[in-house]
Length: 466
Ligand code: GDG
Image (cartoon, rainbow, N blue to C red; front, side, top):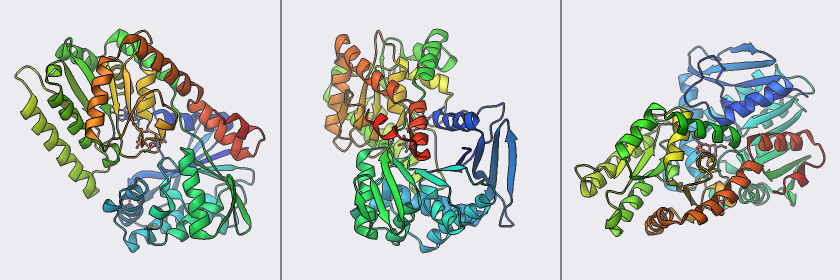
């Protein structure tokens, strides 16, 4: 079966790999190359004169088909409904959720336009795999055009409880469109259960365990926790430590013998960056003996800067870091460094390996790949300690991390102290368990399991019991 992948953004590969090119994009590209297929979505560009045409580029046995958005579509579908309504709502941030009816109409409009274009490109035996919250109604739009192929969806971010989803105007209409899929993949069992509850309580579906029936269709809803390329990342980190790439060498020189705590996140309010800086400040206030001995490096490449809530976060994080550095710093020691730019994956791997503590404290996160990258990058003979929010999907698998509530700054501060003081034998014991779980459920495992389940092949359900 040929594979068709649909995602909001499609990057056509070129010889100059983008700095951010990460595990997921590479894994999906590999899945396409193995079977041959098509990758459809937004080019990332804006052009007027709607509807924009679809451009196709062939790369080996993979066709990339992209279309531009108009500025009005970008505003309503992408910045508006996807990123100011669905993103905050699905991360349990009701106070930040901005619903505009016109944005919702724009969201439906782009999904309709994508469906129209895609319906002309797919073949009868194609298996279609749609990604993320920008494209929830796409299968329903395809079904309306007579598409009967197997269609799956993977939701990369949390799916909230029905009580929260119910706040969104038209939520029942939107959730109902999930029943157009044959398979819906979620990051965790809790997310899967939340969607099933929503389909039952808001849309009147009937459910029997993982299967949901709404009208004539039956949909399977299951957890497929996403993974990373563990072996690839481990090799990258080991090589980076040997070669000491420029940023890493410079970090070594400027830190000297000091310990390093690291945070790596898109500059996004769901990641708890400001709360993390405050917790680090609390740790230094509560434990003055640690001052001068440890620094926090927070790498935070800007993201969605056109959305006002992100511009606020940008300012706020500068203010908090500036205040804490002014209050706690010394002439020869800066407690917190916030760097708002992206580094290469290799430099990142080197930073993770150099850091004694990985601080991954999102307020809510679908999975959080940084938690897995931090573990993959460690030196097995002298590993660092992961401090992980219980509200990241990753916490369901990574229980050997120091699990914290990111809303409790005291708890986070104490976890930092515990991590820094942890004896090597305990660090190794925890690391080995964490490494084993992320290696057993790496990105290849995830892609294989999902596609097995979508193709309807027997045995996939049992194999998932990891
Ligand atoms: C969504 C869900 C889910 C970050 N800074 C740099 C850089 N990164 C890379 C990280 C990591 C990726 O970006 C971020 O992945 P996360 O999983 O942490 O978060 P989201 O971007 O919010 O992703 C999330 C994910 O989808 C997959 O399903 O886990 O819950 O929100 O790989 O390393 N990469 C480079 N330079 C940087 O400065 N090269």
